[in-house]
Image (cartoon, rainbow, N blue to C red; front, side, top):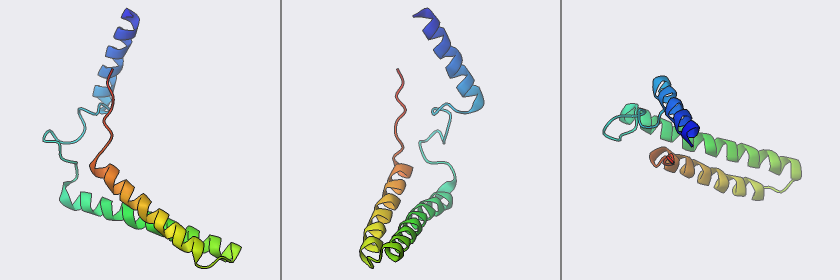
Length: 99
């Protein structure tokens, strides 16, 4: 057990030196780094890119399989959901579990 604790302490120290420790990331007041414009731009890019991928995939599959507009609609809805989930994860990051 002592070797494990010593290793964990060395690993935590190395992560803190490299800036990989979740406690050292971001601002002290809990806001996301980058300012309001950066966060808004990132959220917009997340939604638009997910929609573009979903629509593009739907169009390609519809053209290939001849099922217009069904796969387009399904992939549009999936792309929309993926974009919303990406923005949700942007504002609610998973908590890193510390043992």
